[in-house]
Image (cartoon, rainbow, N blue to C red; front, side, top):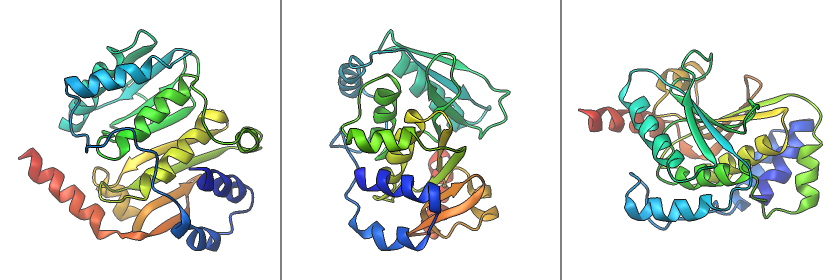
Length: 243
């Protein structure tokens, strides 16, 4: 993740897009807490997650913006389960927010910053969720303090959006780095968006590869590793699964 933090910090100031493409092949696979692919929080996983949440030093709020769809139900059940594992984690819904729906914010009481997930972050992205919970809850990052200080000192308002697919193994690195930036700097926000769930946005923005990062509504960088058709396939597979 350190490589991505260096890169995002530098590019937030200058945005030389070609640098992303030359750098991406050197990025290691993202931090991973769990060996298996996460599709549901079973008893064993809840026990592991409960142990991680004991590291929280300040309260965390999970604020969901949901609709009547099946994915919203899945997200609600996941967040209720997580909140039940620690007295430092609370959950509530604010369904009139003008944000991606379904989605949820991981934040601290009295704050509206920090990471947002427009998805049900299972699979590889479950680790991104756990890291966001820990970092928002005050557990320190292992990145160099000098780099964290650079992120915290960035001057400007930066809203990042990252589109990812479930088959993209490079996406968690990007999501985790931008989530951490949103935790460190209240003027930075980040939304991780499952492209398979938000097919209309994929088509409107003509996203051709993932991870695809937008900054303040404009294309910032698109990864060369995963073709856009994977997003469409992911959306098709989700629809087949729900039938």
